Image 1 (cartoon, rainbow, N blue to C red):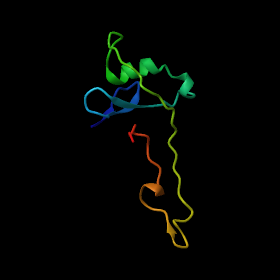
Image 2 (image 1 turned 120 degrees about the vertical axis):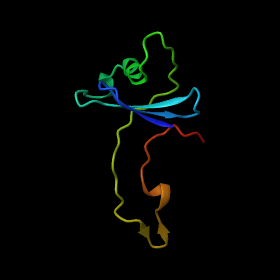
Image 3 (image 1 turned 30 degrees about the vertical axis):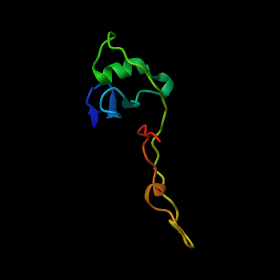
Length: 97
């Protein structure tokens, strides 16, 4: 399950990891925010989820991530091909091994 948050003060996507109690939040920087250190993460999470200070949660991990686009200059070198998941960059989705 993926939900795009339409809260006007935050832009985010919320992903169900197990569908019950473990969730991933992609909290996007706003144009007026200079970087990750300028963000009050607790306030952002509460705005995204639409909850007040009484709501309790635990952060299991955090990763600051900047989306990038990359294009290979070639996809083949003699008998070796790059394809599938090796040929592109994925957004981090908290996958487990």
